[in-house]
Length: 114
Image (cartoon, rainbow, N blue to C red; front, side, top):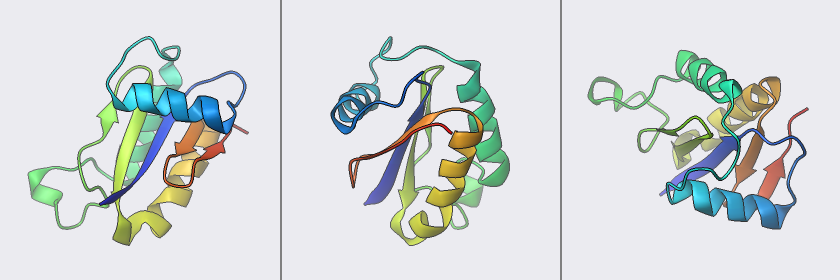
């Protein structure tokens, strides 16, 4: 099990229902769901500079339960439950700094860009 979060660029924060629909499409690997944005790559670089993506040589120290899903439209992460309380606030702050919407599908909570 993992604690998942998804991040994408959207001009105005979606409501919970819209965010859930966007998340489902992104998690299914669909493209053209939201606009591509250079903020996604900048966010991803900030994330991996803080928490390197999952690799064989860092499996025991990594907070991730699987490699990140990254496109030009989104970043979807699966955080190990044991690291969720530590990692998720940092990711939400980084997303806000990069103007991204964040969605928590477990609690169905939308975190809009600040």
